[in-house]
Image 1 (cartoon, rainbow, N blue to C red):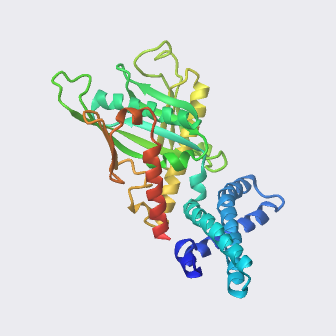
Image 2 (image 1 turned 90 degrees about the horizontal axis):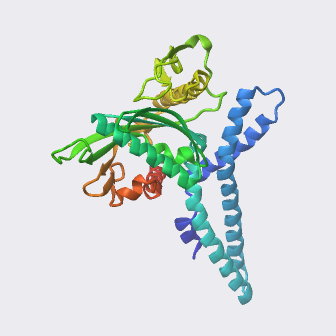
Image 3 (image 1 turned 90 degrees about the vertical axis):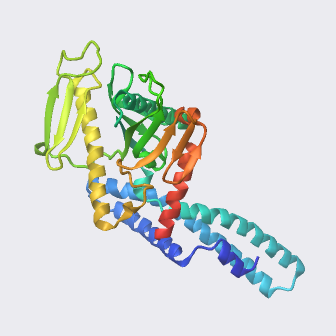
Length: 367
């Protein structure tokens, strides 16, 4: 392989190299900032999060430069030595280094486009029944189970925060916390409108109906990231509601929070304990506020939400689940599978990997 061929196949483009160098400089700056005495806890936490997201990509970048140096050293031997044995060793070295470089550059480009936000390990997922009445609630319940099964397959921790059930076993709303490596990076593209086409259990004539449920995936903030001032949050206590149960309508265990500046409202009633519902409600409120402020900042900085991938816009129809055809179609990447049963049992990785690849390609193009 000639030097020019190496540049064409495995070397980083100048713009990407410069961005990686800037990340390395930022990492070193963060290490200096974190060592300063009397640093406020909130600032230290923010620096630590950013430092953690940069460490991996910078280590890959440093390995890349080491390999390039080895390649160039071997090239110098090929150009300056007439020793046949040395030339053979140099050729072998370049082949070995070139193979590793190809793999490393591909991984490096993926890591380059990820922000510290993408490395969050805890998300709050909200699933709500949309148009379609009871059938939509039943579908929302299946989506809830699907994501719990996916989390189980990946060894993630799932905590139910709130579940508003219907008499027939559906859910009007389910809110869960999911925690595990790459949780936000892998689930962020599930935000949007999920459409189901099937014959409802309540349909006697056998006609296919279309219903929908919405999914929101919110990164869960650390306590210091979102400041909640007591005078900005209105708290109310209510009787729980639902299809039945010993505690329903007997004690004021349900908690409703209203964030006055934004109007964001959270209602949690899953626990019989008012205190537990209050703690969960504040977790959900903080996640929604982080999402709200992040969207505001992104809108001000650029039009990053032009693409359907990664926008998190719950108004978008992102996927259709067609039961008669055993079909799942993701409309953002125009990808269709015929394994609906397995998909609803949590086998999501095939689609998620394609969505991630599409997102990486889009972000690289923007660079």
